[in-house]
Length: 202
Image (tube, rainbow, N blue to C red; front, side, top):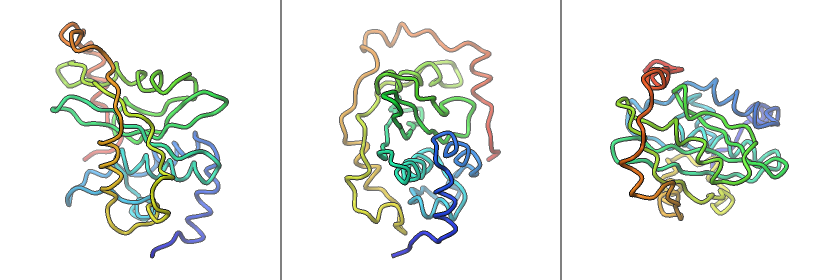
């Protein structure tokens, strides 16, 4: 079974606040999955030095767990022609924030200022739109506590598809009544343009 090196452990120990973890996640190149879909464990994300949203959330949640945070994931679910997103919520002084690995100017880190998971999840609603401005976020999940999985998940050599499946199966909550969907106003042109800004070129 692979294990973290002393150097890797030292790096993660220094990332002792959510803000530091987020800065570190931002420094990783975006994983465009050029050779097929991946869902790397935190160990192999560290070693590859790249991540997409759920890989970043897994690594971020694991690093937070080293500093006495509970390692959580939260799934933001969209319509079929958009991409879902996964974040790593954390709680400080009774308020929720989130780590987020994304390549875009939106759907990013959240400061711990939200009173509930619904408040946190809904902070992403207006940022979630297609290039035509249509708003696409429809559900958010209950928290998935990664402590429920076997201890080897953080260093597993293979892809963590079981965690992805659990995120799909866990209870989800609607963000708005179905009859409101047709009444949603599209994002403004300036928002759409801002949403096209990327951190790493494909």
